[in-house]
Amino acid sequence: MALSFFAFGVNSETLYCTGKIQYVVLADFQGVYVKPDWHAKKLRICDIDGTHSTAPKDVCNAWLSSIQAGQVSGASVAMGWAPYDDSEMQCGEIPNNSSTAAPKYFYFYAPGVNPNELPL
Image (cartoon, rainbow, N blue to C red):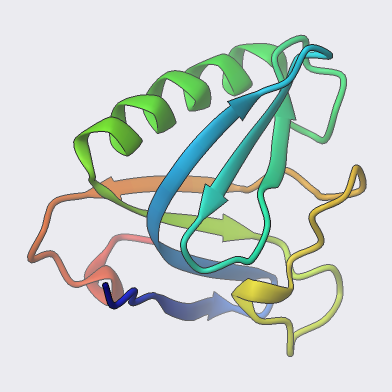
């Protein structure tokens, strides 16, 4: 099975990565992780109680619902991250430890939509 992904920058402050969510993990300490096909490891995006990253708990819970629905339906997703003051960062290099910043955006889109045409 061939996997494809796109990475594109809208500005120097945000890195957008697109592809599919392979799985979602909910940890016993309320951590929410996603495993996108463009990264070798799962990424901690937020905590349900709002204690990790910059995502408040209501945002984290909304993301979790959307991510689970998108993952189950097979929808493609575009995720936007701040590149940690590194304009050369690539999607597969986003840190996957507890210091990972929350994404800024999630876009779910239908097959046939060009991710470069999303209103990012």
